Length: 385
Image 1 (spheres, rainbow, N blue to C red):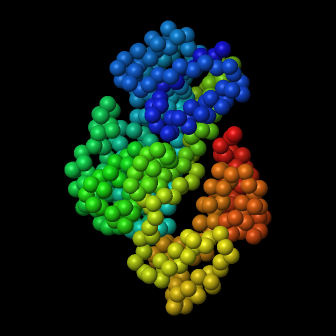
Image 2 (tube, rainbow, N blue to C red):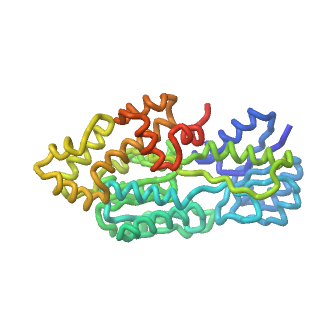
Image 3 (tube, helix red, strand yellow):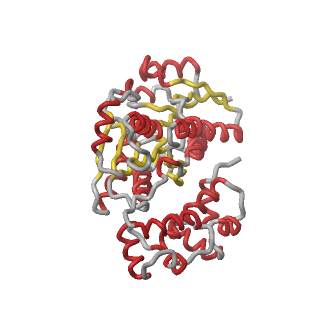
């Protein structure tokens, strides 16, 4: 029986889903035995303590969230190790990492599509996943000609969860309204939500908030509930366990990165707002949001407002940055993607549910968005039962 030492933050939704993937693989090939090591053990005893524990327990492999990695120290164990990276990626070891930059781009595109012109980011300076999400978000926004206000927590690792409510409140009050605020994860998004409530800053009218990880406990603890980016975490855990198995069997020898990718945005009340000043554009946006799954044409939408098609399309492009037709497609593809990953619907039935009437056309459009067919996307990313 293989013995796997797992060192991570077991209180977070991300880590729990990661473990679900690891356990799913172990049941397919097992039996495996796991021992959980909470992060406070690392904080109290350091990496030497982790290595000593692994030797005493005679671990066959390690999956660990490590802030710093002493390669020589862990090589002394002569067992495979995968690091859930924290400060940085290490080129000399396999990393369980993420497409953090693309996660920031996804957040920026989401808010740009809602017509926001003011943007902010709140994160943790010491963590690579926060730094790279900030970079993707900021650079995407700047590409569209806007600026991003930044607030980064610089506390030491053992106090990263602490924040100064007064300083954050002053920062939030000083932001132009409305502002689209992206937080590095749901825990930090909840800090923003709590502070906004203390300072009577309206969510989402003054500050719209988006987090990462879709930790349902944290998202539902917020008032209003938090929108969040869903990540392919369980599959990441599965692939990490598979890689360890390959290392142990000598089928894999080189360091290899497992990349957890962003999938879609779970919309909740904290982003339930379009930041558009033109009332006619807002009417059209609201109609698209509520009727994307019905048969609607640009002509139908033009008939909703007392404007010519040319004037409406110009106003829409100026406010949203995309065409009316593209906005409808974005809504349909986003909801179609979610159905692919969260239901067992046949692909043509899922397409019909989101307003498409020709599956071949859907497949062509989807490939432009995701660079693969709907069937390939579902096979690659859907949570397995």
